Image (cartoon, rainbow, N blue to C red; front, side, top):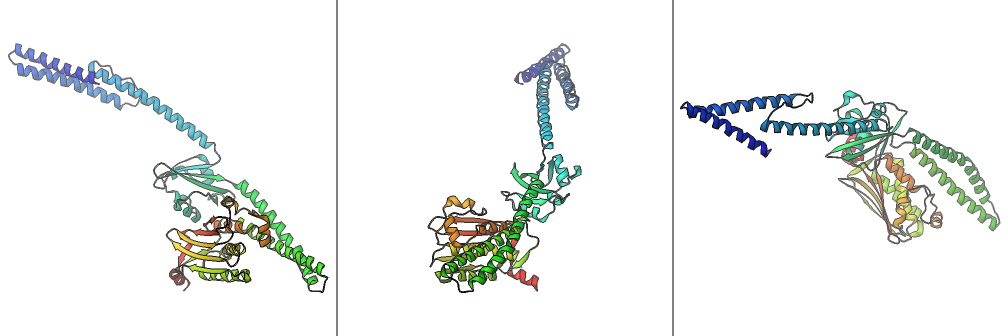
Length: 436
């Protein structure tokens, strides 16, 4: 480009010099100089017009022939144009391959821009979510209006996937997963998990049916055992029957927990929400915990925020909270201390149970909510637990959009906390006005 600028300068000087010399011959050097510069300017304008005409074409034609600086400029622009065309073809090829590969996927993939509007999606999204070509640029939440999806999308916490029915086909179960990328953009993946749901439903039905069928024989066995124990029997036989009755009660508790867990697993969300007097609920659980403690002498401390209550299913939350409190009683030697608290902050509501009992090794914490997982088999059996309590707590909280956190160390006690999102809370004043 420096060479081109020098060439144009030399050309200008040549035209100006020639015009000046011709002007001297006719005794008008000034007019000659002006004429030379004018001719040079007309030639530059002509070259400029040729350049602009070529640039405005879209037929990828060769640049016009020219000499000197303009020729060098046109050659340089032609090289850049060919490079840009090659790069454009490569990018188009990559985009075409990406679209072909995503179209072959069974998962719906949607790209949402920073304004929550649809930017791109594959063909599977048309089938699973009912998107149409004219939906481009429309807000995503105007097309998927399920309140549970709206809540999931807006909370911006996408660690756990969301399971919902397809908005266009109620027989299809979808699992939504959202990831962030770029500057506020999101990619939404909707996966058809209908087959997995049906397999899980089959397993749940088997467990529920088996548990239901066990209730009748267990009731008969317990009835006969109670009848026999009411009579005068030899001590060895009475001791054996007492142990049989104790194990029958434990089996009944296990069956009841299995039935409850199967019912909780049948749906991922609660069907309806009702205001719950959280203070009354906690106080009643504390009374039951004192009865369970009996003569062990546990000290209970309650710390309850009286400004906010919860909304949800009261029986399910009572089952979850009581499981945590009763576990603290079982695994805290007397006279231990148990603190039950309900606090609210900007992150939501928090129900916590803290004890100074035997504690749990941190290595076991990730598996505590698994069915029948026991830290110590002999210790758990002696406590009378079924091994399903924390699994029930986990599923109840999932249905209420809440999370369970566990902090514990061996010999240092444990803290089990249930964290509820702000939209599950209600101020007492608002609740009272709605009730009135």
